[in-house]
Image (cartoon, rainbow, N blue to C red; front, side, top):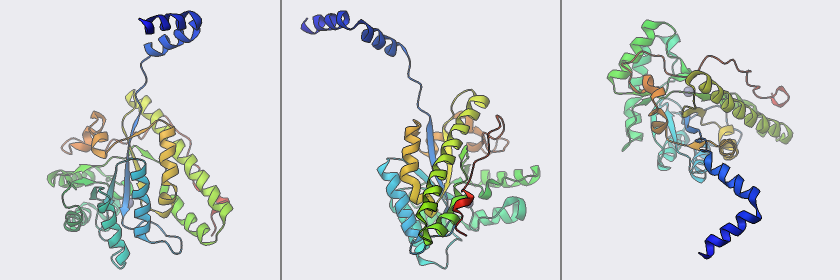
Length: 304
Ligand SMILES: [Zn+2]
């Protein structure tokens, strides 16, 4: 009774705010878009600044993910870093953080260059080390190196049929800001202790990530009529590790919520990636609307 009269008093005293409250309640809040983070080229991607290690990069990435409570999926090239004991430790560190691994080919071959038989053999060659590293988790997810799925239908179908027969799903890419382009200038500018150039790289990296996120949402609206859960392509590079806390904060600021790859691809939009008996290619949001090209690393910060 007491609270009822208080409410009445408030309504009489502040009619505008009561109206605003009612209007807010009547609106259904728009669901926040979902994003799944994926990291390719484990354990070795791009040049490192002097003094950094592969395991250090992985630990920085997994620490940032843990702090942001963001799941992620990694993709292994077991043929990378065989001459470097730190590379093996990097794979162990990824798994020790509780993060899953899938197949990215043993030697990261381009299907269009090598053809289906060599490509498939390289996938199979990666399976034993992948199964050993991924113990206890389903590793039957494949990410095409270079996102090359075969430009000729016969080649594409042959690779896809093998992946299907071996029980794989394909990890799609529906958000991509070409993070790999930043690895070399970041290493060079860090080695030169050029703080002005590094600051330019940091700002540009976040600007391209933001532009790619907005572009993906615009394409989903145009092509699907709604947000799809986005699958973001990244790599285990030193710049990615350096920027990940700020990048995850950016996605939160853009109101994304973080989901697993399996949760994202449970959306019907990804049916052709989940069931490889269906015709390809993997859904990618490629196409219209046309979007301006990403700016990439500024020439003023090449440090070469
Ligand atoms: Zn790759």
